[in-house]
Amino acid sequence: MSGSPITAGKAAPTALPATYVTASGLPRYHPVSQALHWLNAALVLAVLPLAWVAISLPPTPAKGSVFVLHKSVGLTILAIVVLRIVWRMIRPAPPDPQAPRLLTLIGRINHYLLYAIFLIMPISGYLLSALSGRDTPYFWLFTIPGLPKDDATQKVFESIHVFGQWLVYALVLLHIAGTAWHLIIRRDGLLERMLPVQDGRGSIR
Image 1 (cartoon, helix red, strand yellow):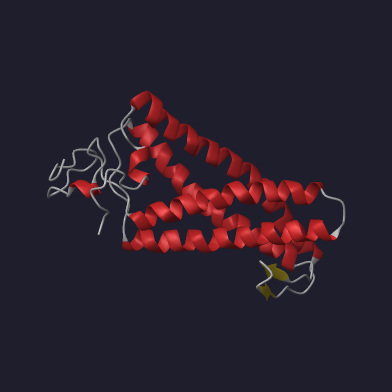
Image 2 (cartoon, helix red, strand yellow):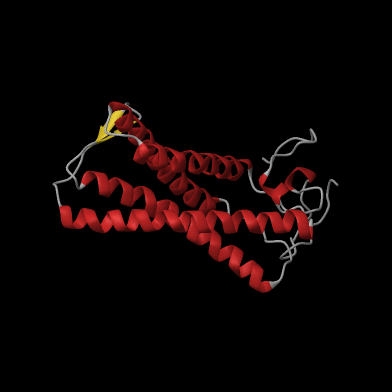
C-alpha cells in the first residue's frame, strides 16, 4: 500500500507512506498520540475502581493508602491530558473518515468533553482534599501541600467531583459505543488508526 493516497475526510495533497496509513487507507495517529491515548485509558480504568474500594473500606490505614493511589492516579491523568492537548497542538489529529455529519459532530463533541472532564475531575478531586487542610501525597514520592480549610468551598468541589463521575461513565461509554459502531457496523478501520503498525513495515517518523 506504499504511496496510497488518503481518500477519507479531506483529500491529502500528497500520497503518504504506507506506515502512515491503515490497511483501509485511513491516516494513522502518530505513535506518541497512540501511547498517550492508551495510557490515559488504562489510568481511567484504574482510578475508578480505586475510588470504589477506598469509599467502601472502613477507616483504616489501608483506606488511606487506597485513597493515596486514587489521588495519585488522578493527578497522573491530569498530567497526561495536558500532554495530550499540547501534543495535539503540535501534531494535529488526522482527518476523520467519511461518516454521517451528525455522528461525526457527536464524536467530536464527545472527544472535547472527555478532555474537559479528565481535567475537571483531578482538579476538583485535589481541591476537595486540599480544602480540608490535608496534604496530598503523590505515590509516596512527594507531597502536594493542602490549602487553608474551607468547608463551604470544599462542599462545592465535592459536588462537582461526585457529579463528574457520572459524566465520566456516560462519555466513556459513548466513546466505546462509537468505536464499536465503526468496528462492527461500518468496518471502516477507524480503531486501527489508534493502533501501532503491526506488519513490520516500520513506524511513523
